[in-house]
Amino acid sequence: MIPYGRQSISEEDIAAVEAVLRSEWITQGPAIGAFERGLAAYCGLQGGGGVAVANATAALHIAMLALGVAPGDVVWTSPNTFIASANCALYCGAEVDFVDTDPDTYNLCARKLAEKLEQASAAGRLPKVVIPVHFAGQSCDMRAIAALAQQYGFRVVEDASHAVGAEYDGGKVGDCRFSDIAIFSFHPVKILTTAEGGMLMARDPALYRRLQLLRSHGMTREAGELEKHDEGGWYYEQIDLGYNYRITDLQAALGLSQLGRLDLFLERRRALAARYDTLLAELPVIRPRQAAYGVSAFHLYPIQVDPARRRAVFDSLRSQGIGVNVHYIPVYTQPYYRKLGFRAGLCPNAEQYYAGAISLPMFYGMTEAEQDEVVAAVRKALA
Ligand SMILES: *Cc1c(COP(=O)(O)O)cnc(C)c1O
Image (cartoon, rainbow, N blue to C red; front, side, top):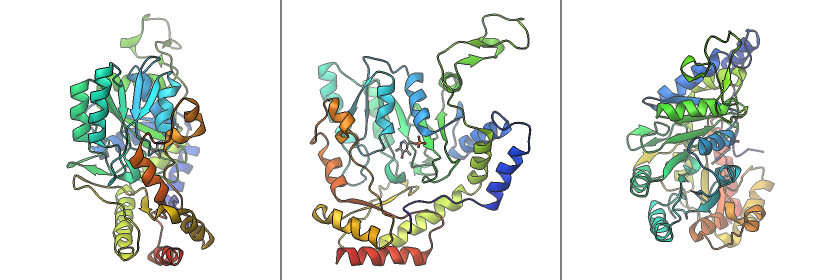
């Protein structure tokens, strides 16, 4: 089976993890800070910093908390995403709602967002936070979303789980030029892996510090944050209600080692995407369109086929040994969300895209021979 995604682990990665195992610290050691500083510098983040955590779901949770999301608030996100992008609002007792996607990029649509904001403003029910998701590795139109955030006074958290290394408007996703926080996932199917892991990027120093506290029980030993001084070397204070969402030094060492190959990973994914574009050009499929404002990281290569034939094409590909997948079932159609009152029809563009969607294999180690096999299987499945 050719999987839809697969991690790439080098001998250097293994040596980096082994070195941590042989060192004094296996949890909160020097690799975590080095990984955070390395990725923040890679993204071009000015000020603030990166906060590495146990996974991107934990990152989304503390992003909501750091921005003050609480019962009575509303958070909006894209329906075309993994459920975690929406669940983070529910963790905080807030409500969640969905903004329909753009039919070309499958990303949260800035024009639909503007329309929905106008209605919400009239109803006195504006969102506190909007979470654009950079689907498949392609950035949302962040300049337009940031302008709306200014106008309507909401905060922006980019779910960039798919988009480490992606470019937008001359900068890298994660530089937070158009958002308060950006989040990456390092799950093995994503672009860069730490096994489980995630990172938040925040430019504002106070927000950055709040995220650090929320990651680890709200505990501090920083002199400037303590109420009592001269209590002794053991002393700490809890000044916020935080969690244990820490990453380990083992994972951070893996991430740091992988970061050294990130440009190689991206180059390969982009080359494979360009090759798919050429090889699929004559077939009756819709290839993923690319907006002119940026460069995708190509976490996924999603195509659309005739919705009436999607199931048959998917089954045929699986039976031919091609590990295709589908991204994403619109979040609000999940049984849990239907119980909250959501109904099919809420986001027609996302539903239409989902009905024909198939994600083809896309990963760093994929060979051209494997890609040819995938394309031949697609051709056969469509015939
Ligand atoms: C993978 C993913 C997440 C969750 O990431 P974890 O690190 O597995 O918690 C959140 N949002 C999106 C869009 C994802 O693809």
